[in-house]
Length: 84
Image (cartoon, rainbow, N blue to C red; front, side):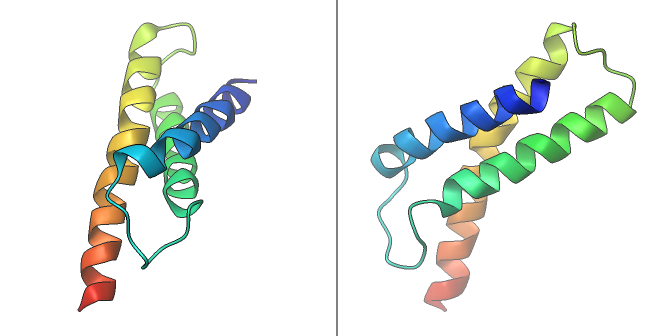
């Protein structure tokens, strides 16, 4: 169920990403959302494995702030490498 919430949050990030991220011809519109979704799922799995409970607020804060940050940095890296 929690991964469904992460999926919905990634969809919201996909709607916001074209307005927030710099426009580029080097990647499609769904690339930032897919990166955010993969990062969120990975963060959730790692934090659960480390012992964070699903009812704690820390796991939610880390995942919800980590997803857009991962998308931002990954898109910047992708843009820079494809430009070169």
